[in-house]
Length: 318
Ligand SMILES: Nc1nc2c(ncn2[C@@H]2O[C@H](COP(=O)(O)OP(=O)(O)OP(=O)(O)O)[C@@H](O)[C@H]2O)c(=O)[nH]1
Ligand SMILES: [Mg+2]
Image 1 (cartoon, rainbow, N blue to C red):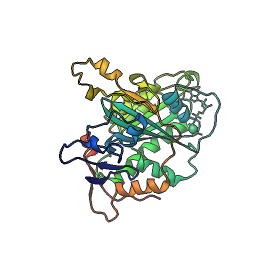
Image 2: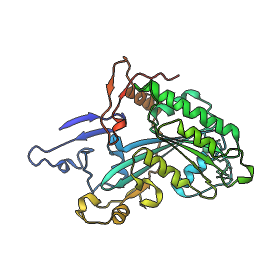
Image 3: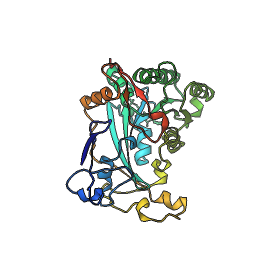
Image 4: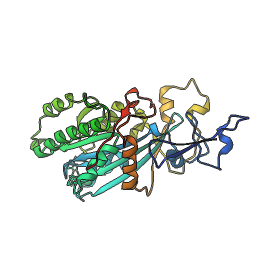
């Protein structure tokens, strides 16, 4: 039986194997058990998310000026809802768990404050984020300038953390021009974010309206594509189920000849209830683990995307 910590300290993976049968299922019920390409069909979806392999656990951070519609975009993506009333965000944390083609995935969404009262927290969110949605409002030039600054800050921050100082860090980022329903008030021409996007690798751009539900799903879908995550993470490409949902998975069903459409329909997802943001201490630990305190190089375990198989260096949080 082997015990190992993954790159995120709140995930403890115990890979257990019976030396006689080689079957990890023998330990089910005694310990939290995970092995690559193996998901026990008896686990509720929410538990599968908790034990998802680290490369399938992604944190999506939403940044941008105040009132540009960050929270509205998240609400549209998660609940397909829109609220005309404005409530300022301090920080909101959401978690969605998926089972796609027999594998568990976990997507954490960090909805930040546009007022960023705590700059160190914002920097920490950049360090711990894997994917970024950078939102401006098409009727507000300052909010676009902010997105331009954010692109640079994220690249610098990730560049400091990784041994990629001489070239741009590969961070999936989606620039989103929200409130495109307010065409009459437009002050940002799409050519400007298009130019900004070209300056970065793995960067996309779309105009959206959380209010009219225009391009919201497409924006997240583009970001998943950039991050090489499964398309089925998009709301319309999986079934919404209860957290307690237990079902067979497509990889174990043995239906090899299934059509792509049918395989897609086997994907399911749920929003984790009452989930709390990992503590700042935990986030700091993650930041520390992702960097290196002595300046020596730390190997990060290989992930499905080759550019995530990388070396990382010390990074300062200030
Ligand atoms: N017309 C229009 N209004 C929108 C749209 N998206 C959001 N709003 C409105 O804009 C206001 C601000 O939206 P929020 O989603 O709360 O903005 P936010 O970026 O989260 O703001 P902070 O939490 O302060 O950073 C709300 O009154 C929303 O109803 C949109 O696509 N079109
Ligand atoms: Mg908000």
